[in-house]
Length: 141
Image (cartoon, rainbow, N blue to C red):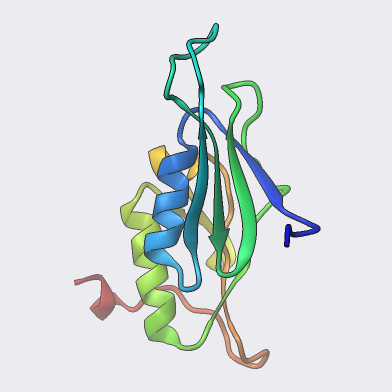
């Protein structure tokens, strides 16, 4: 059964890289169907990835390689709940090591070829009384 709501994220040629990164980094994340161009077109070639379906922690998404016209910005973010500091550290380090940038208040700005620019990913503990922390110095070794 098709999902009633799927998040569509616009990329400039990096949708497959983003989907693979999510699938390799976050639990319950997968890469699904890939639609490739059946022939050459004005801005691409036969076989280029046009769209890729993927899930991020169970959330259905589609990456659309639509070109440079639209950029990711702070209006959209994946808010990731973590179970403990070790999980926060693992995810934080994976994002930073793939071009992400540390930001204020426990937020990360993703970047580079993997996630596109300006997607935000706050990592928050599941317990509402726990205080989010940046990775410990020990976990960065």
